[in-house]
Amino acid sequence: MQININVSPGYDNRVHEIFRLFFPRAKVVCGQEDGDLHGNLTVKECPDFWELQAVLTGCFEGRRQGVVCSGESKAEVKRELLRLTYLLLEQVTSYTPNPYGILTGVRPTKLVHGFLDRGWSWARIEEELLDKYLVRPEKADLLIDVALRDRPYLLKSPDTGRNIGVYIGIPYCPSRCHYCSFPGYSLGHHPGVAQFLEGLIYELNRVGQELQDAGITVEYIYIGGGTPTVLTLDEWRQLLVPVRRFYLSQATREFTVEAGRPDTFNYEILCFLVENGANRICVNPQTMNDSTLEMIGRPHTRAMTIEAFQKARQAGFRNINMDLIAGLPGEGPEEFENSLKELLQLAPEGITIHHLARKRGSAWNEQDPFITERQPVGEAIVGNAYQHLIAAGYLPYYLYRQKRIAGNQENIGFALPGFFGEYNIQVIEERQTIIGLGGGSATKFVDYNDGSISTHHHPQDPATYLSNLESLIKGQVDKLRGLP
Image (cartoon, rainbow, N blue to C red):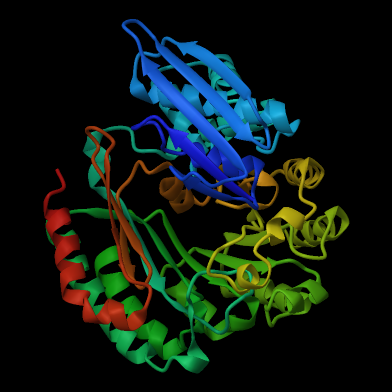
């Protein structure tokens, strides 16, 4: 099925995403004549108001809806056009696909923080989400609950703008999982780890010296990937020299290593990480079902997950997070609930619930581009899981969404009080500058005066990263010198 949409100039941003919610398998194009369904969306500016109209032709011949909008800004008019489109498609399909209504972005809690910045109450925010954004009541309450819980961790004033987070990317994995699109370079097929590590250490030293000279404090360190624990003990010894020298201090609140794959856990390395300041680690089974693990291309077992957790605990980690994915092929509510119960028995400090997302670069997307539409993920799985976690004392503290996510749900982190992943909060809410170093990392400089964000990306490919290293470092240093 092909859908052709025509939108008044300047108002086309995100309209195609609304159509994709209702027709996830369709090809959505703009400004062409051919198509099984045509959507014509017009905005007419009048002296004191706007006239908005959505007309469908083709397989929904002659269906239309219009509204007069008195919005004070173009952003409000754009939102009303999305709302009008959503309501019309809902009417003609008798289908309500998205529990988040017209919200299709990654960070819906940022919208709530904007309302909180204006001093709005819970009741007023909820009314706005339900009426203007068509969010379902349970999701509106969840967004407000999460935003209020993570709000105390956000920077309060420009004076604290010189406190930053740092992400260090290790773009290597022992192998690639079938659902993953991140091009983590398999160690078995990519011999350049030594050269990459040399370049990363050089970058850490150069940027670290700049941070130190400028008196900038690193509050959060996150080493991710990839799978950082594919590094050997000797490589970890090299890597953590500049980390300890320039980044880690008494002011560092959190130092996370996303170990991830249980088959990479080495007790000696875990002890070394703790001895050198790491205080949070991620053990990510994704499921505790061995047959599913084999199906998704993760060469570890349920028993290996338990062993990895015990190794981390014995090494001295007192803040362990574990991930599960809802909507994996072959798993329904019972299988997912069994995995969750096993994690609760281990009693990690944090549990993050992801929903399977169809990623363009993954092996599964090439084999079955509609895999997430076939997975039985709904409110039953979500609601039961969240109830189990809350009953066990875990609280939701950060939330984000992805494109083509199963059930149009969310990824959400739960943790025991006092063990929230603070770096995760900063990444999602985008109120603090985060410097990205290494392969596949992203830097976001936050202007604390107007909230604007300047983003810079490092290449994921190690060879490309190394060949552009000097210009990457220069870009980081120039921006750091411009911080107020």
